[in-house]
Length: 109
Length: 177
Image 1 (cartoon, rainbow over the protein chains, first blue to last red):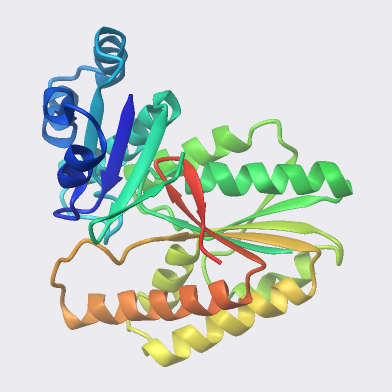
Image 2: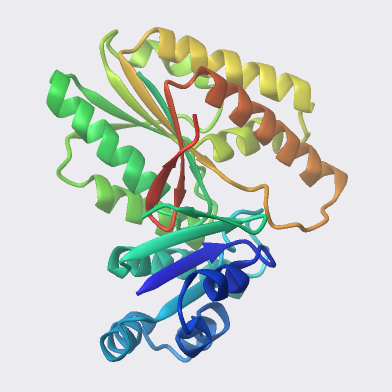
């Protein structure tokens, strides 16, 4: 599994399409889905482990959302923190982690 | 050795800074102090403090709380000690936003930069945790912008002094210097 992380509109999907064969068949976008899981009280991590077991070529794409001022709204604060911790866990599971900034990918794992 | 670890919320920056401090403690067999700057206002801060206490459990860190006036805690550490300062973002906020007034950005920056360096000059090693609060692309009030600028100036100064500076991204320390 490859984990691609970076700020909004930094070129994560383009990076995946350019660097991994048949990437479009393996991409999973994390943030919106993860927020739904958290809001439903479901732990997303076991579901992600299952998805990786089913598709070892899975490419998980995720927006970095924690690099800002702490939001006033509790739901936003909680999501930001939970999503960050989930990203740490996914990075541990990943074979490769790529951070994309300004369209440029840095392999950080 | 001076180490700076930046990162966003939930990026694993505390865990990395603590791991480095633990390594230094084992290598040098010196006492470790956890210099905590967070002021507890409600359940959110309580949750963070509890999680950090749990992370430090059994690691032999002694906690010193100093939400502001960092220069005042100088006498509380033996000369050869190892300090984990957590975190710079709270320190800047606590210095700037007082109960009845807002302190000028330039004064806050100068006070914190000299306070931290003075502390470091009197200790063996120090790791500092600092939030990356700069990349959400949101527009804020002038007061918040002033806080962000002060935080950026402090961060840039500390990074220029640090032997090692990192950004923690999804739990992975990325070297910056």
